[in-house]
Length: 548
Image (cartoon, rainbow, N blue to C red):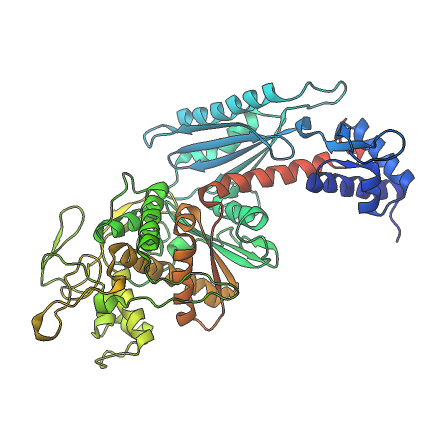
């Protein structure tokens, strides 16, 4: 059935606007060429869009031709303003942009854990209003007769926690500040003309990586967020998957070996978060003798990882790195052969807890040493064998390290991490902070190329990340995993290569691992892209619906 004239006009207008958004200013002749529409049809749509205040003449083409130069038309970016918020447990980051995404103003406000709901919401809303006012002063003079010029049209919010798929509201989650749930409602009340939307922060990060970052060439991938906490976002066939209750990607609750307990419905201690959250990463860095960041948050953990990568690259350590085409692995020194750092006979944990010679090994250390245990059986290591193949040996010995030391305590993906301890590596077993094994004749073994503390730290961290990534790969077969967040970006190709090398040994499913190119900024970018899409869906509608 052919489209009605009004529907055809609406489709043509949206096509032209999308081209102007993607290509920048165009002449009527260029619009005709790109759209395939007739000259009269293009002339009509240019008149309509100009009258509605969506496009205007921004210059002239530089083509040499007879007569006057052709006029260049561009989208009126200040037709509407957009706000993006990255809501964290410790504060809010805000940016305001024009309709094309050009940032006009930014603001941030720290919010302490003792702030009440009312004061916290007021601080956050005030930051949005301040940024919106600053952006308005930068806007061009409003066009007469065009309503809503330069006003805040749409607000996109990225927040930790579950989003109710039926209502779009942030659900009440244990461990999240109460002001998170009140913020969207208050913003809508204070900005009655704006459209306010809320989305899970990791989902927004995945959207940004897909549109502007490391997954631009992928329709199917998983983003593994590594920051203050951990989370995952799943994109299948170009579509973000949220799940029946909005909880797709709550990987922080994934039970994993190497922790002291199982997670619960309200506390992810003992889950994947306990191995890879920021507090766990900074504790691991301390155990490996690396400089300890000032704060065990996402930026602090990223600082530790970035420093380790720089040290490894400077020393020319053998770590898997991407090559042309499929990634090629450079041999890695086996942690079980020379991975120990000289130290005292007893291991001292951060915080002053001593692990003496009688310490009880946990399931992971038991499996790697050949003692029977749940992790040994699950990993396929034969407790009765005195030695294993090279692949099994490396996997087992690195699993030892993955289970040692303090791990993060938290209740959700990113917020509210503290620390909880699990049994450390038993004496004589290799790992960060453990004494070296004696060689033949009682002499300590010679240091191998991979004995650099930074290299050990990155190998152990890759072990931990691979545990969660392998579970995702086994279920979804995404073909690509992006290590996102501040830590994923800081690890770069080095950490991504290590994780990919481990996944090759753990799964028959071919999976490329990439480092985020956006890092911690991905949430804000995703919130902005979401706000822009929603605003353009409305503003690029047929003229009789635009209120202009």
